[in-house]
Image 1 (tube, helix red, strand yellow):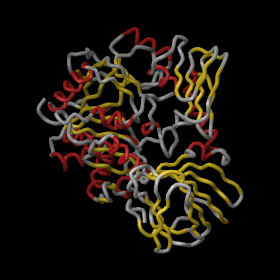
Image 2 (tube, helix red, strand yellow; image 1 turned 30 degrees about the vertical axis):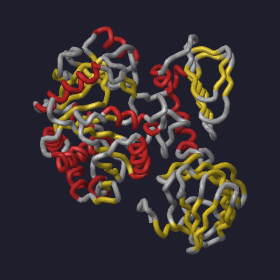
Image 3 (cartoon, helix red, strand yellow; image 1 turned 135 degrees about the vertical axis):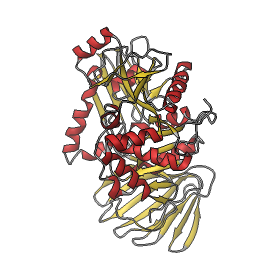
Image 4 (cartoon, helix red, strand yellow; image 1 turned 90 degrees about the vertical axis):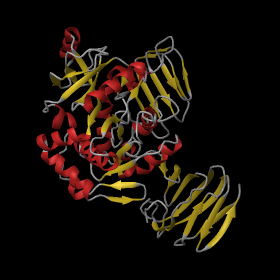
Length: 475
C-alpha cells in the first residue's frame, strides 16, 4: 500500500511474571530476553522500514522515559513522539491518546499499527503479507486485530472466533472468548475457527476514535482532554494527569473491540509469543538435545526440559527435570517450568513483606539517562556503589544533606566539579566530596567512565539529592 502506517508502541507495562529479571523499575520489554537487544528494541526494528512506516509513537510511563529514549537511540531509530502516561489506566485510553496524537502529527486519516513492546515475533514473509492485508482493511474502516493460529490448547491467552483463513485478508469477528480452562481450550482447538488474541491491532485513527466516543465515552473524553492539555518536556509529551486519571481502567478489547460492529481479524500463522512466563521464554528458544535452554554463566549436568538463566553468578545444575532457574545478582528463582505461571503468586508474597518488597521493584543495578550504578555493599552509615557514565554524559549539579562521598576512578576520565572548582581525574585517582558540597560528575572522554563511590553518613537514601541543574529536566 502507498500510505505510510503510524506505529504505536505500548511500552508502559510493569509486569513481573518474569521475575527476578523483570521488575517494576525495569520490566521485561526493556530486557534482552531473546538476544542482544531488548524486546522493545526488536519491536522498534520491526517498524523501522521507512517505505512502510512513519517514525513510531511510543506511549509509556514517566519512570521509563529515559530508558525508551536511550534504547531507541542505541539502535539509531528516531521516534515521532514519546507520550508519558501520568497514571496506569490499561490499553483503551493509551491507544485513544496515541490515536489523537497521531491525527495531529500525521493527519486525521492516519492508520495505526498498535504493537505491544514485549512480544517475540517472527517477521517472515507471512508476517508482512498479514500487515499489508490488515492495513488495507483499516483503510476501508475496519478495526483489525491479528489472530494467531493456535498450536496448543493454551490457557494463558484470550481467543477470537472467526471464519478467517490465513492469507485471505480480514474477516469479521464472531466473538471474543476469555482465557479458557484447559478443557475449553482443547475443545476450541479441536473445533477449529478459533485464534489466539495477539493484542496487535491495525486501525484508522478516525474510525477508532469515533467508535471510542460512541462505545466508551469516558475513555474518549479522558484521552482527548489529556492530549489537549498535555505539555512538552524535553523530548517527551506529558499527558495531563487530571484528565487522564478520569479514564476507566479498561483494556481496548473490553472497551471497544467486543462492542463494535467494525471488528475484524486477520488470521496468521507466523511464530509469535507474548513471553508472558518463563515457560513461554523456554518454548520460544532453541533447545539442546535434552530439551534445555541455558543462557549466561551456566553449567548443566544430568538435566532435561529446563530453563537456566544467570546474569551474574555461575550456576551449576545437576540431576533435575522441568525446572526454571533464574539467577540475578540479588535473587534466585527456582520452580517447576511447567508451573511457571505461579511466579506471579511468589511476587505477591515478596511484595507483601517489607523485607523483600524492594526485590520486586528495583535491581541492584539501576539505569539512568547518563549511565547507572550498581549497589556493591551497604552497612551501618556506609554504602559502596559502582558508577558507570556514558561518554559525553554528565550527572546533575547536586548536593546532599546527610552524606559525604569518595570517588575512585577505575576506568576512563572523570571531570569533577566541587563548589565551582573543576578537576580532571584519570584511572587510579580519587577525590573527596564533603557533606553539603555542590558537585557534579561528567565523562568528557570517548569510553565509558567507571568509578567506585563510597558514601558515608547518617542517611544514604536516593532521595537525599538536591538537584540544582540537570540536562534531563529533573532539577
